[in-house]
Length: 80
Image 1 (cartoon, rainbow, N blue to C red):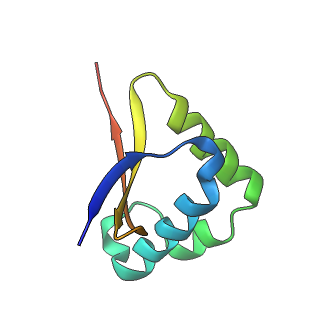
Image 2 (cartoon, one colour; image 1 turned 30 degrees about the horizontal axis):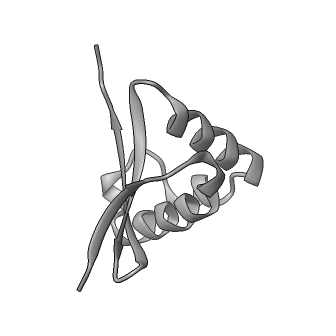
């Protein structure tokens, strides 16, 4: 089994959306928003929020893969 964690760029917002919606389905109490709220967001919203977050100088987005299959996401931010 090969596990990898890598940064994700703004252009990969469809992958982030897929994994985020999967996480909201699996663990709804772990997030501030709901599956219904995020599932109903337009593509433009996802592209903007993921693009902005991925490029932020004090934050980042990562995706974890197992044997090449995406399975988890992580958001991190430095709070000065």
